[in-house]
Amino acid sequence: MRISLLTYSTKPRGGVVHTLALAEALARAGQQVTVWTLARDGDRAFFRAVDPAVTVRAVPFPPREGETVGERVLRSIAALRDAFEGAYDVIHAQDCISANAVPGRVRTVHHLDHFTTAELAACHERAIVQPAAHVCVSSAVASELRDGWGIRAAVIPNGVDAQRFSSAVADGSWTAEHGEFVLSLGGIEPRKGTLDLVRAMAAVQAERPQAQLLVAGGETLFDYRDYRDRVDALVERLGVRLTMLGPIPDDDLPGLVASCAAFAFPSTAEGFGLAAMEALAARRPVVVRDLPVLREVFRDAVRFAASPEQLAAGLLADLSGDVDPARVRRGSALAASHSWDDAAAAHLTLYRRLLAEGVPVGSAGI
View: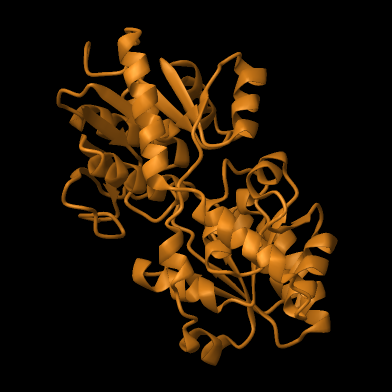
């Protein structure tokens, strides 16, 4: 089967990680897979090496001075649309930008957003209503899609590269520089719940002054400078000791995760929570926001927190050594139960059904 997966960036965002891992698993299953992406900021390749069995088509997308977020979104759609070519049995978009660029095929809705910028809101809506078929990585998001738009999506959970994180050894250089630290991945943005995390860490550091907060990642299409300014102001007002690490080289990520004393995941909207699942694979204690989707995915393997106060209490318990070994084992087993090869097999079953039913998911008409 000739399969095209589309994503919007070469940076290490959750949807991009998903796209590459799924592409490689589909290739292992004997399929011909091409990944299309926008290569931003002069990138020539993805943030990590990709299995040579997968063809990568990276469309140059240079920055443009003074461009608004809305203008950047529209230019992104146009650039990917104009470059896209080839004959494919299945075209599968992994985000709203690529679903707008090549509309009407398969779309994975990882999570639902609520945008106020007109171009973004329109892009988001089109990327939901135009595809011929939909996939969600959790039942909770599929329920949102059904309740909000009357769309029924196939539910195919993420895989997890559990072995990569379970075999990771804590890297002493992180603790040598930062001591005891709480780790959060995804950068500073509204959806990652950074303001609540800063409030929680103020309470944590009041009792454990040695505890640091490290925030890694943060490459994004959108401009969150106003939110980051609010975070910076709160950090200064509360005196929170926070270190922004920025993007972490992919080879260094497992060692960083394995070195943290606790992993914080206070996102306000998620489809699955891959970064937190990787922390469980590394046998780290994890505290996540109390959301229906995260209850579904993580069950009894994490602590749940509905407020900054509960987040602080959970982190303090883990930092003080009040970690249930059985919970750690459950987390490790849960992460190991999610296989990218299983995810690929489920996608192939879906693709074959759609093709047998004559659903227009391929190149016809492009």
